[in-house]
Image (cartoon, rainbow, N blue to C red; front, side):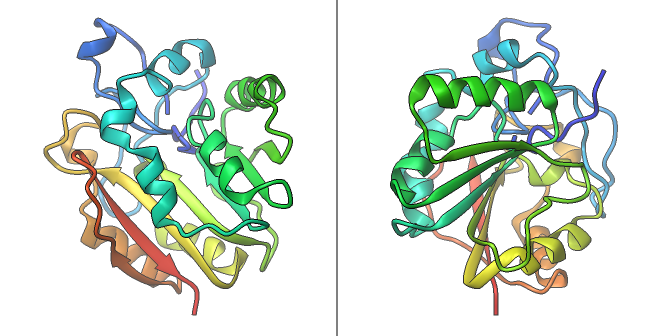
Length: 236
């Protein structure tokens, strides 16, 4: 069994033991309640996302759009054509299509994940969907492996709670941002029917602190997502 964020986070991994509609989605863009650890002080909640085909049924389900609101999330990111955007915890590629459209033909989208099977799945999906500006890549658990000053935006959906030593990780993201760059963390509210067990969920104020400890100016963003919140961290 591989150790993944769901993400990255980036999304997510789960053992489906009940009908799909009864599962709690989270991590790497969605997943159920099932996992090993996480103490709310920087230790991530880890899960197995190695079965990409199974996870695609969760992450790419038609029902997800209603509560994930991908169009709103991408619009809030204020992406301009030609930008470089990293989807950290890309999972099965749920956000990659909208991001690829937003950056345009001159832009670039990096689909990053820690799970090799998900990266392989997304590589094939990008070829099938014609996402020529998308580059899937596997990264280690503790490093996004982004060059300094190389990205304009980083999107982390349902994945931040999977990451260990989050302030340290945030510092690596801050270093990777271009001037004026931003990190967007989308995660589950305490009362969401999707997501990790309640004890592993992070309050938006905690994520603001973790991004700030990593050198980013962070704040909660206004949005209309019914089960999630968004925190943005900006480079100085």
